[in-house]
Image (cartoon, rainbow, N blue to C red; front, side, top):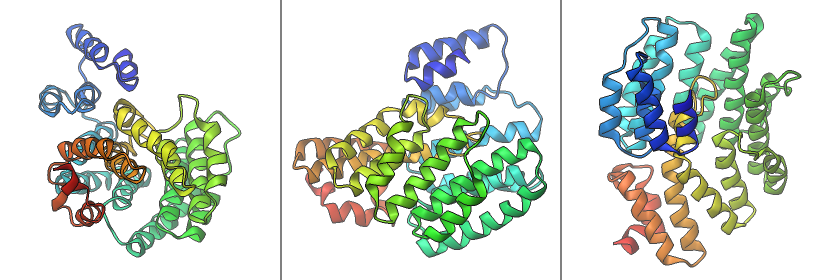
Length: 327
């Protein structure tokens, strides 16, 4: 627990020491959290070594939770082909574990589709099916399943709005909500982010910001800052949008260690921590700071050295003429 808290705060040396002490005192885990300490620093070989020493519990519903980590690592290196391969394998395992767990990994796949150039119309069809299945499952769900299912539907509301279907987003938000009358801050945070995205894509970024700003207290979900970046950009406040992009790329411990709904958002978060470098380059470029733009782009290209080979990303790089400027 101490190692996790240190790593989420970006204190990686202290985290590694705490995890190492735990292991030497006889603890045996899958090591996904320990390995994440190195992945957050882009020390992927060390992360793989630590993960290989881990020990599964043998309980399928528990062990599958850590499947998010290798998917996130693949995305974090720009290897989307491997990420989708690993995710497909995880979804196949989830089929035997019930609709709540299946929904977790279908939602994870939908989150990557929101980033990888999948056409919006294709996304909407998949999200609509996802929401319809969740609505049926929620009718008979027990309290534990119900909480995670509501989180999944709240995320679907965000994704639907992001794909441009505000009506579907509102339907999903109504299914997931209202805000909890018990202490469920993670769910409530995501409900607010979904509403903020509905407002943003409806041409009301200032209303989106009014929802988001009060959420920032140090415990907010990582996706809150993704939405803040988009909302500030939508409000033409490029300087503050750049600050949010820098926050996302700097807080990689948060991206990896945030539990949310059993790490459902981990691959999405890590992808956003990388794409934030590209956004920072674009925003710096728009603000007239070519040197900072080149530095941010160089950092992005180090993170994803084959970015120009990704069909959905190459036009963006060429269109901004950032690759030529950086080299």
